[in-house]
Length: 412
Image: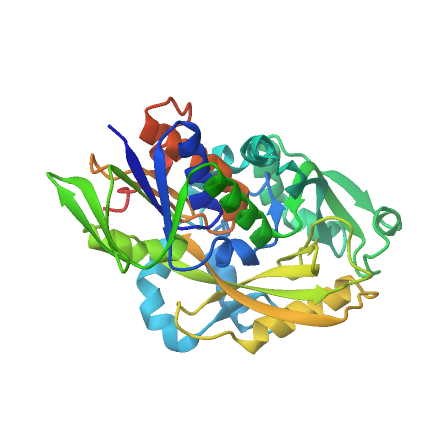
């Protein structure tokens, strides 16, 4: 009997899970030490990137990585004092940089991201929040056609998943979007995508709708769990003990220590992500645009133009680095030479990166502890679908998706 479910984490995955659980008639309490939508769910690029099933660990990455790390203009950074702690995870991560594993991972990600726009609309339309989802193209901007062809492997995987781009070349690029500078002469345009103009505000609106419909939200720190006969019985928090019948772990990279409390070691690292918001921006793109040379996405948002991306490994404790932020600025101003703003806001967040680039979704044994974390770059994109899958598992409804690739105990 599932009378009471505790969801730990008030980001897009946790709140989505809670809303779907409430729709099945269950009592739900969401716990987070922060307010909804103020963590990683706030700082992303806002894209509902249905075509984002290609992992970073493609074939040839091992050969290319040293040059990437040493190139000050490439968007990959390491905090060198952290490298010894990173190495065990990094070895497992790089072991997937081959064709077989890349295709396996891509196949696993397609069910989570492939119908993203539809899943977001299914989540929020019933709540009267449909205006948060903006239908749009999603563009990949390249210096030239040769640079686009150099990404042929990734585009092959996208095409196999049903996502074929419309190619725009030469002066037609600026006809499509006048904000793009002359250094960009090739666009791969993905139709039928979308974005959120304020990811943090969106999650906050979802959280309010959840509480308005009777869901509980508690701001406190989770300390431990109590199990009885191998099944969850109580969540121990700074605000006291909360009895429950099921628990969902949806706290991103901070789910790793919670799994450790349950005796499970998960190879999960923080992939530190940055953004710069150009407040009140003019001269920016009219739709989300991935700048291929800088590996970041520029998205028009309520606050201004948000440029988000960059890969940095350095753990959870170190503060922001200057180099990634300055690189974002350089690439943004080169891609959009007419960009002007009234102010700039910097942000650093922590994307949860499992060593195999697949989220952990499912039940741990028969403990009634369910996982919903590890979404790497696709947290906003795949949050509603993940929440729907987990809610189906808890309520006993068929999920019609093979969950084996996401099994939470696959690393044991």
